[in-house]
Length: 297
Image (cartoon, rainbow, N blue to C red; front, side, top):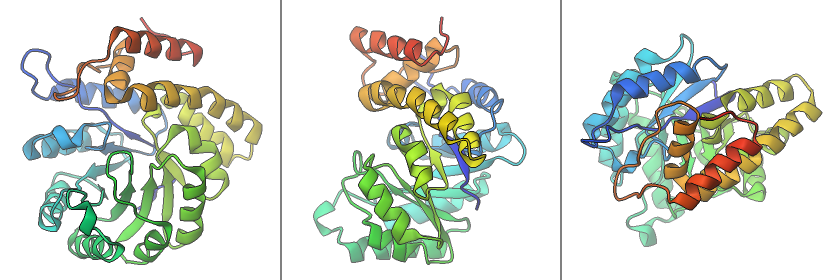
């Protein structure tokens, strides 16, 4: 499983009347994103509102994503559940629908009992059973259970655990993860503010929501970095970093979806209990797109 490059954690559009998943709009968005040299898609991640999806919706999104992607593009499915059994089931079903790998977050409901040994046992059991490669998902903002660097370094030595997405947004943690994982697996950046510095310290790529709004700039950043044109890559980081801070981190899923609407893609409303962006947040999103030199209606 090659995790080099920019991967997009795609959003999930819903019909405004019924609240059901709009699968046609989902496929249309993917077609637009595939015009850029992205390495792959993540379906059912945090930006895709995975915790708010029914199982059959998630699996149909994986199937639609597999059919809509460009040839040679990887498809990763978010399959983390609270039980080991539930996660194993989702991994198997996602593989049947065409996923190439799974992105698995740690369980957090019984947080006080989620010791490093419990987390290690969980991931090893899931990886032993999964028919496709497993990517660890460290996202403490939403899942307050740490995959500490030492544990990540241990887990990637499993034959079916290929890497970790670090969405801590903490440069020091990212560096420690890169050092612990070393060449045993791949580290991918989960925060759009850290794509360039993450690549500099050893990350292989990024799964970044800001790429949904600026796929061209994100892909060009990666391309110029690999080509050794650090100054160009740095300038592109300066362009997408504030967009991440203001929209992705600042307004979350509702703001990202509003940004997609402004860019002519299918964003729409988030699924309850998430609320639509406020008027102030809508204005902030529009301003951030303007400052990033992204045209919108």
